[in-house]
Image (cartoon, rainbow, N blue to C red; front, side, top):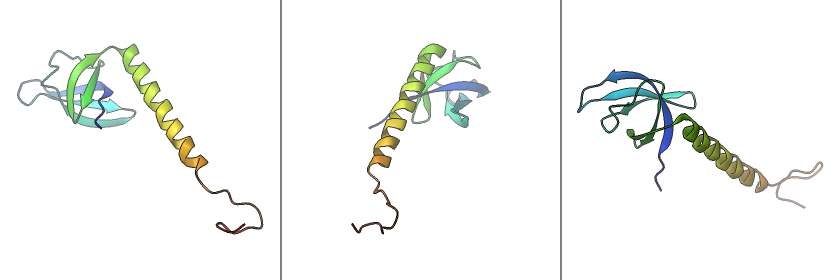
Length: 97
């Protein structure tokens, strides 16, 4: 399954196609992204990025909503993983009653 993620355009590197690229930030991590599909995006705006290519612009409030939902899903998955861990009780060895 593939997923497109919102990111904030930090700085344009090259505006001319076919090599339009910008630095885009995803939760504090910055990556170089192809911007050929969204040449009208300005620094400070949000774009949806799939496989290293910005495919559309998105407004800030929608980007924040998507990021919050992704964070909630990640936390839910983490909780499920923790719930599946065996519990060590004082005086016992994991795997023994």
